[in-house]
Image (cartoon, rainbow, N blue to C red; front, side, top):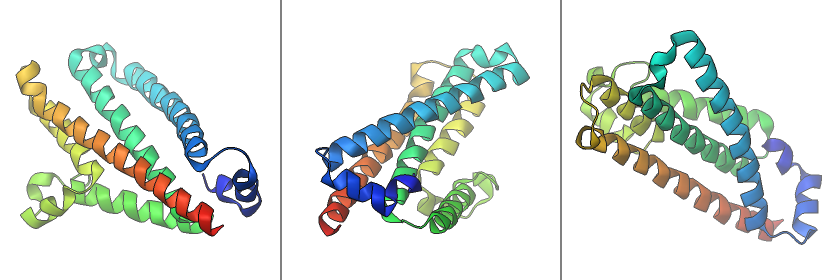
Length: 180
């Protein structure tokens, strides 16, 4: 993503007939296609390793949850690449965000062991909602609409994050275009 933020490429984009919204849409769409390919590869490898048990309703919901989180992660990456030009700085920021949010969301340490104030803070992170869905799905014995409702709510929250990050990316792109 940082390659698209190089000065020469940005200048060409600014003087082109394409406005920042169309540019961001095309960048998002191409990134989504790339993410879809990576997600499909992950799904195929998972089915090969674990077996066809992942093709059950539970497995499909796991994969759906992963897909929504993948797109959310993608939109965060687009936002970060809009904010920062330096590739090394982007790597550092991504590491801090990824590892920090993973720790706060209960990836490394089970959420039950984390203090309440940490979990309250974690609610503002997309990874919390992803991990929460996985934990809920693991504990469910019966899969029906009523028991799956909290999972769907978590996915809707993730979709809300996706929309938020896209809107913020558009706002930042517009302001940077005016400055540039």
